[in-house]
Length: 244
Ligand code: NDP
Image (cartoon, rainbow, N blue to C red; front, side, top):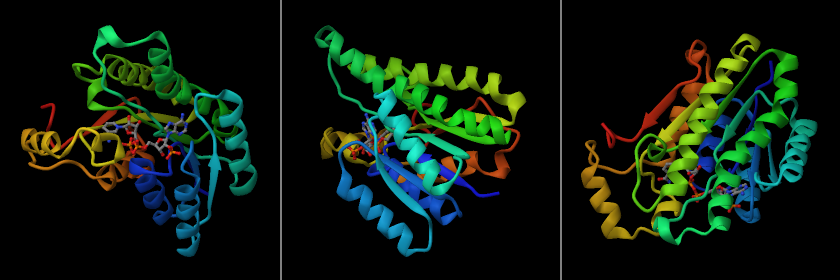
């Protein structure tokens, strides 16, 4: 059966590495992006050049209509989605006292409501096929507290709750739902921390280095594949031992 993946936030960072890895494993890939059209289209061309089927589509995960339309576009072009990777996410450090209601709502709209929208959009197809997998990219800060990241941490913990509950609900239908919780991964998201903080974080990591987007793509590929066929509702932490 044809394997079709939809990756939210596939233009940059972790999502980009996930799209490349899944394409290499024989998936046709839908690459969702918010603003980075050029990078998403570049990736589409790169993967097509390698013989994979790929389609870049714009869609804000927080906008139910827009992301549902993007998913339908991909399904019309590539076929029913068998793997959804909810990777799009936003983070910003702020002291709790300085968080506005708008800021709080936006973090939750992208990091939690986004996966709610996308899962509801792909489920009719997955339920019809009685197969499928959903992988949510949470964070170690959804498993542990993070000073000055209360909104982000709460949203990533919520994503873990969504994962576990949806996994129970969908298991009888042959659909698995899991999470990957990355540690500190070198992408645009963490560049704002600056070199000094990043090397301190690498030192605090038992494995002595920061993670790469490819490290997370490998964890996603494992949870997506047949080797994980009896695994659902789990959180796979990929952090070099950071929160042990
Ligand atoms: P980046 O900031 O490098 O990339 C974010 C990606 O998400 C981009 O492709 C961006 O699109 C997309 N995106 C952002 N908002 C939206 C939206 N509303 N709708 C659709 N797409 C959107 O992030 P990372 O690659 O570092 O992070 C990916 C995921 O991994 C996130 O969920 C993050 O929370 C999580 N994570 C990251 C860690 C890290 O250390 N980097 C650690 C733990 C978890 P565009 O390019 O168009 O702007």
